[in-house]
Every structure is written in C-alpha cells, then in structure tokens.
Image (cartoon, rainbow, N blue to C red; front, side, top):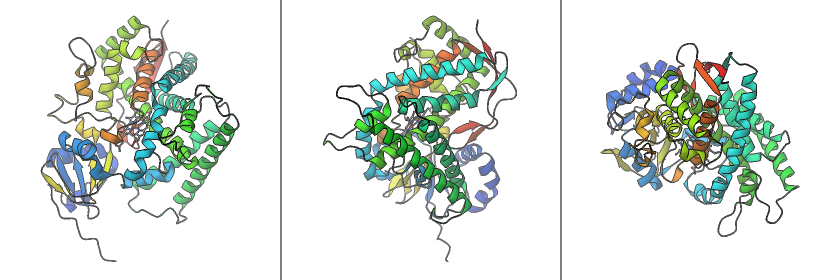
Length: 457
Ligand code: HEM
C-alpha cells in the first residue's frame, strides 16, 4: 500500500523528525507539548501529519471564525467525535451538521429554566449526602476528586431520572463509564481497528454498549408504564426529553432519546467534576480567594436555589477563573468542509482543526499574567460579573457559536451551588504536593486530590 502523500505545509510547524522525537512528551504531557508548539510556531500552526492536514489554532479571532462566524464551514467528523459516537450514537455532542440542527431544537426545552430549579434540588440532596459521609470522617484525609465525580454523577443521574427509584439509573451510569473508558483507549491508539473486528478492546466495547442499551431500554419501558397525566409537570429531564417535540410536532425517536440520555451522562458528569476538583485545589492554594469566598457564603447563607447565583458573584468568579485555568474540555476539534483562511493561513478542505481552550485561555495578549489565579478578572469595580470577559473570544470553556454547550447554565449553577454549600460547612486543606494535571476526556489530577476535611462547628 503506498504511503499517503504528506499534506503541503501551509503554516509554520515542527518537522516530521521533531514530532517523532516529541512522541514521549506527547504521551506523557500533551499540555506541555501543545504549549511548546504554540511558543515556537505561534497562533496557527501545522503538525506534519500526512492525512488529514492538521492545524492547531490558538488565535482567538481565528477560533471565533471556526466556531462562530464560519461555523457552517466546519463539521464534527473528527477522530475525537467519531470515536465518542461509538458510545453516544448520534447524540447532540457528536452529531454532524445536518443531523444536529433539528435535535438541538427538540432537546433545548429540557434545559429550560424550570429544569434548572429541579437541578438545584438534586444538588442539595447530593451535597447533603456527601456532607453526611464526610461528617463520619471529620479530620481525616479524603479524595476530593473522587467525591466530586460521585457527586456530579449523582446530580446528572437524578436530574435525568430523579423520579426513578429503580436500580436502572445506576446500571446505566456504570455501563456508560465502562464504555467510555474503552473509547478513550481506542482514541489514543495509533492504529484504528474498525469496531466490527473482534479485537479484545472491541469485544469489551460491544459488551459495554450492549449493557448500556439494555439499561436505557429498561428505563424507557418502565417510564412508558407511568406517562405524565394531562397537566402534570415533568418529573425530571427524561420526562422533558420524552415530551420534547419540534414546532411541527415531531418527537425524538426512541434511539434518539437513548443517544441523548447517554450523551448527557458523558458530557455532563466528568466535566463538572473536573471543574469542581480544580476549584478546590485553587482555593486551597490561594488563601485570599478562599477567605473572600467564605466571607461571601457566610454573609449570603445560600439557600441552594437558582436565586443564589446572583448573590454569589465571587463564588461565580472563582468558578469562571477555574474554568479558564483548567478548562475540562481541553480539546475541541473540527473538520473543514471547504477551504478557509484562518489568521492569514490557508486551510484546505478536509483539514483537522484543533482548538485547545487550555492554550487560548493562556493567550498572553488576552490574559495578563495568564498562569495567575485571579477571579477578579471576571468582576467589575462594583463586584458584578463581567459579561464582556465571559463572552470574549479568548474564553471558551463551553465552546462558542451554535455548538456551544447546551448544559452551560446547568453546569454553572451546579458548580456555584456545590462550592458555596460545601464552603459553608467544611474546611478543606490540601495535603501533599500540588496535583499534576492529566488531560484525558477532561483534565484530571494524576493521583486524585487528597485533602483534609474538617467540619465547621
Ligand atoms: C463544566 C462543565 C462543562 C463543560 C466545561 C462543558 C464543555 C462543553 C464544550 C466545550 C462543548 C462544545 C464542544 C464543541 O464545540 O465541539 C460542549 C457541548 C455540549 N455539552 Fe457541555 N460542558 C459542561 C457541562 C455539560 C452538562 C452539565 C451537560 C448536560 C447535562 C452538557 C452537555 C453538552 C452537550 C449535549 C453538548 C453538545 C451541544 C451541541 O453540539 O449542540 N455539558 N460542552
């Protein structure tokens, strides 16, 4: 079989030999590799990969062009999303352009303001449960990363199927995580073996997806036995999804409901957990920010409802700044559908465009002293949230444009409520060295986040 012809280089970038020599760094510390490449080759650089031609785009205006101004010129048929779709199917996150638009319209009502109030209730329940566990371990070292993963899974699970007391929800979440683990392994493998080939990895994947499918089936069958009566309000997001329909009356098909349910578990759990874990680490290592957060929480006495958000600007700014320094979705990819020009560089059709919020959020032209944790970047002189900063092209923890995160408001609400309600009740002190950030599906601490928990009297 002939070797693919190398893509012509249209932008500065490392030579093939440089890339081979960097393989060790790419595997060990991909964030370091990306930062080095950006330092050496600038805002639009090309990696010497024959097929597809591959660009890393960090210039905020060029990123905006890919995600917003010329969003129609870019699709999601990339290795990142096609591998993920082995689990999520054609759910919202992975659907390519044509399949996506009607779905987004149909699903949007499930993220309406009413469901946020339901989410707030589930956050209160999950936080109370965590506090009960921690009160039995007062003064001990706990893994905060594990606790945040647990909590976020519980919130997304109960927000979706809160009214179900059946064990199906737990089975579904377990099966999703098992399948996702295989997908990450597959995406990182240099050789892409089609799923139909029964390699050990593919067999595990097929089994996990099979378990996933039967768990969703069981839940939908159970839900069909007790449909909403006329006028009864939706009990959870599954009710909202099942009721969701387009203006022309069309509803989501059964497969589409399955795909969305799995998508929400995948997209809505580890992301939130990662943000919360890093927020606790940053607060523990920045005592002045922690002092202000504690003072705000003590003054406001949060009720755990959506109304708290407006009353907790410093807590919100802590979350915003955490999402800048540790954007859980550290890599967003697109395929160019036609030739384009980004930052003065010609990008051919069918190119892979990699945008790393990790890099964009450290762009020195947009963020003075970018490595410094400083939540006040997000507040004006009166202490109000600066919408111009949150909406700036150099800030994209939730992406931008039409494919922006549908769960953003849910994530921000959950993040702020968890930080505020735990800060009101416990002190968390970091023990051991600072955690090393490892970019997997999201950015995670290499060995968890051990902290000493003390209940406030
Ligand atoms: C801190 C938490 C979160 C972060 C950082 C985050 C980040 C993102 C990003 C960057 C995208 C855009 C990806 C792209 O353009 O290719 C995205 C899309 C998406 N997110 Fe989130 N997300 C979070 C929480 C959630 C939650 C809680 C849910 C749902 C329960 C969710 C569901 C989705 C879905 C369905 C999409 C695809 C939207 C579309 O293409 O129409 N996310 N998220």
